[in-house]
Length: 279
Ligand code: PDD
Image (cartoon, rainbow, N blue to C red):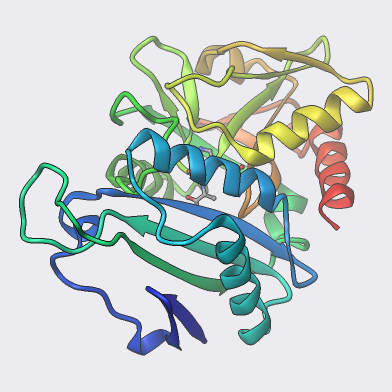
């Protein structure tokens, strides 16, 4: 595989950055992940819009135009022969002598690589996933897609050690914020699709936005409000959305079966609708 580093395409194993890079020392950077299906980027305009927003919020200057970034993404997908998988992009405030405040006259670091992954036919899409809840230990600007992911690493590890595939984080307000790398949804017994409204408490998911639009288009009932783990235990269905997993049904939360313990009809339908939209 080849990767992109600051203007050059190089074999992945030769792709290197400085140990003084501020992404490495301070997690001073942002990233994006977009899915690739049939060799094409999925919902990429939304990902690039979010990237621009993350950069602006952190006053990070992008070393390339969005048009150049799309070219880099497409080049990597083509040269690495990715039919199904994802493209990862990261921009940090560059390499400079270690000092907390912004360095002057330093060019940001831009890197990108691809990963192959089965997204369309996933075992978990058929049998559903199990999740656990953990406290949300992140900072207050979770709307920025920053590379500071330690709380999410610990949350995913807790899920893994519990034999689960994802963790839903419970915010200081007692309500679920989101998954460690996905947006959280439940479907009430009355059939309403419930997900937390966008705010600084969660990442504004690109897949979330498209799924909500598809749900509304198909006459499904949508309610943007926060919910607790206790409400989720009693829900008819639960599911998550993310670029890397699209829509995945959830069959248990904290060891309690959701609905009849099988992927629910709404989640299954939303996954199918999203796949149609993505292809
Ligand atoms: N994660 N919430 C968090 C905390 C996330 O990290 C992600 C995505 C999402 C879903 O956003 P989207 O639908 O735009 O992918 C929600 C990516 C996939 C990752 O870190 O790998």
